[in-house]
Image 1 (spheres, rainbow, N blue to C red):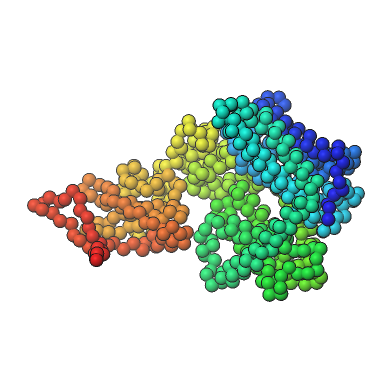
Image 2: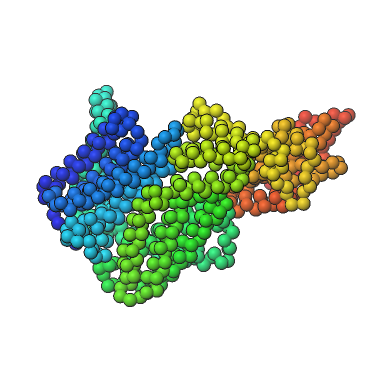
Length: 598
């Protein structure tokens, strides 16, 4: 079933011309960067955002170029895109060295999602004159648009491979003209734009081929959905038996659970036949799919809870904001799809249709609001981190300060300046030093930037930052002074970054207290330094490295054992030897008998 009327010749030419002009405008932006009218980052963001969204939407929706509604849609979209891109640009102005990726990449993805969701409604209104689109019409147009864009990307890539082959073949003849021509920025921009335009034109005019491709994809999803549903069900059923501690001890639980949920939502949408009353599976497989849909709310809730745990511990960041937003949207889908699984009126899973219609507006609103001042991830992050650090100044790490300085825009820099003036930071020499050093940097990873000294310089702070293992007495004051004076190996425990713990005991049974200082980096086992009191004071007697077994659970269990002081001295099986009072330079102590060889 075609989703749009045939395109007149003028519209076909316009689609290719629009793509060509897009390439030209991107090339102009590259050449004029730093000059009028693209002298600042805000102007460049408005330029790039508009060029990549509005003309693309016109190329995918245009049928009659004389239709005033087409240009009205473009005008409304231009206002939204220019306004939101101006907001992102403002966040990245006014300070040197700010990284644009943490704000730019989510904004670009949000604009792509908003455009993709809006297109089927625009296309329907252009064809029928109103917004009351049926689910069937939206479904057809959404898949048509997605596959058209995929075809355009594939067509562009294959053509560039042929051009590369062209240049390489003539390079064999020592003719470098084509290699130099194809490497010119202007040629790359114009050729890529033109090729993308032809790809969009092919997708819009060869709708039957697109529909066949879609049917092939649907067949693949139909074959894989039972397996994905089975994975979902057995994973959910296993949770009560394995417990949730393993999930909380990882940093990827939320990501994996959200990925599983989104895959299931996508596959179910591909398999659900809105235009057929014949179920795609026998009854027992339908029950399996329904069971997986009922498990979706559990998985989505666990993903949200895992993210909230990190927020409770370390505050909001940009990544956690987007994780929570995605998890909330996924919960909406999960609840709706769970309801559709038990609501068995009409066709199998027909309840998906109203859920998808509602959720597309929810996703559109989330994409637009999260890129605006109304739901601003940078503001939330800065406020959360500022409050967290103000409550515990000595807990500030280099990563905390660097994130505020470079990754959340101008307001992060201002938050650091405000913290620098707070009495709690002024009273903490280390915290004040870290903020001052980070504010003085002009780049996050610049090779010419001085190293940041975040070392602890105060005994009171040191005692607070190095907890004692269970059952361990505090080391004597002389040990603390020796450690603070950098006379002992500290296993990176003086920079305030890694979690550490002190185990105090008489390890060699000489009647004097020894100290084992262990660094417990995340997922990397433990690294400990053994300090002993000798005739000339404290000295480093040796070091120990404990592996985690290359598993997150192993690392967590090891760290818990060290914190509980579960270290048992083990004497070597073979004693050391001395001859006439002289000890050997080296000795190999066998802990186990060698295996018998045949």
